[in-house]
Amino acid sequence: MTGRPKVLILTLTGRERDSWINPFLFRNLRDLMGDTRFDVTCETLINAWPVSHARNRTFELARQWGADVLVTVDNDQSFSGPTPLDVLSEMGPDRDFCAMVTYRRGDGPVDFEPIVQNPSGTAQGAFREVRRISAGCLIVSKTIWERIPGPWFRWEFNEDETGSTRASEDFAFCDLLREHGIRVWAHTAQGFSHWKTVDQAAVGDYIASLHRRIAELEARR
Image (cartoon, rainbow, N blue to C red):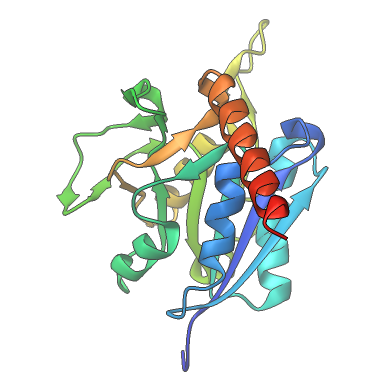
């Protein structure tokens, strides 16, 4: 690879995710566009449904764009600690895949199981090898879609009278990686928030502060 790695950042939103992007993530994405360590493109994936199709579609788009790395972020996530690009710069050549552990805003870990399964795996700094991890934010090298044929994500059900879920699409993806000899890594530094799990008043307060700021700027004209 010559020059800066080409990174495609895709935010999943639309029908499957209530058609919104929280304002903190919007600010995060704006800042990522200015990261000079990488050649960054930010796009949204809108109305791809169900979620397994949406996640498979991100891989297809990354391949079409000729990306070296794909970063996917669900629309109800945001980060106040290390960014996905910070994590990418730490990953090194021996890691083709990593996901970031999400937390409830201000409350520490939310159900560390099953968001991360096997959290006691090999630790290397902030990285920890895990069996499975949820897909709120994924960092995926092109090695994955070059080496493993799609579909990469699929919802798996038990073959019994209940048809209950055996593995969600993100857990099944982690299983697929390990079947192909690819280690699953989590980056456990706190600072990635899952807004679907918090009081939406916090979002309302932030939006109200933006309106006040806009009014102040207009008053100075």
